[in-house]
Amino acid sequence: MKSSRPDHFWTSYTDLMTSLFFVMLVLYVLTYLQLKKTIRVQQDKLDIIEAVEQNLKPLKSDTSFFIYEPRYKRFKLAFEVEFKYNRSTLDSADLYNYLPTLAKIDSAGRHLKQIIDTLQQAKRKNPHLQNVSYILVIAGYASRYSPTELKEQHNYELSYDRALSLWTYWKSIGVDFEDPRYHGLIDLQISGNGWGGVGRSRDEEANQRFLIQIFPKIGDIK
Image 1 (cartoon, rainbow, N blue to C red):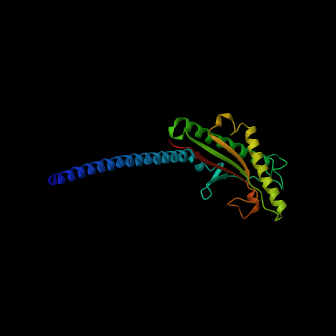
Image 2: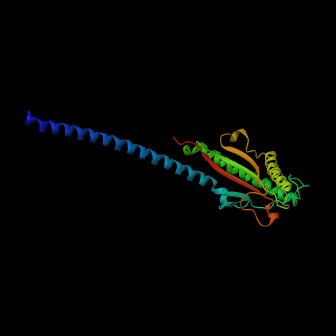
Image 3: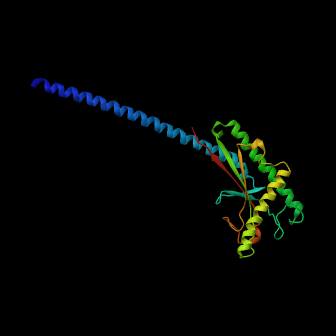
């Protein structure tokens, strides 16, 4: 009986080590698979970001209609839009230099539409972009002429009305970013920055402007 105990011990020890080995092997395989999955997801995200950047590159490089402000990650019209005091519509009664300004606004809208159409085509062709959509913000600004609270509130409304006028005009010439063909691609938002917003000019006359922001919304990556 005494002589059999060492054999019994080593048999049990061997079984224990074998069991631990298989446990460690299973844990290693699970960790490896999880890590591989994480790397694949991160690579997919990187591919999406690179594809989006590539598709927006023409809008950043062509400064004829829009100027990209990298500090604020947004675009502004590359030309001045001068409203008369307390006015907001894109017509001869509210705009200085009406005809030249309207012609530039027309061209800028059509150019922006070309970029959106390019994003739509890229989404159809590139599997990485199937779960990507974009927020398009049309923002209006107003000059800060009065420190009164009433004036501040009014200028937020005025800047929104200006952005709404820009959207309405673009829509009237066929540049409609809410067209059903863009559903699932574009989430349009119209905003008025009033006296707020970053990157305001010290020259208040220069704050009568429009800003355009396009940024992607990336859904879950399976």
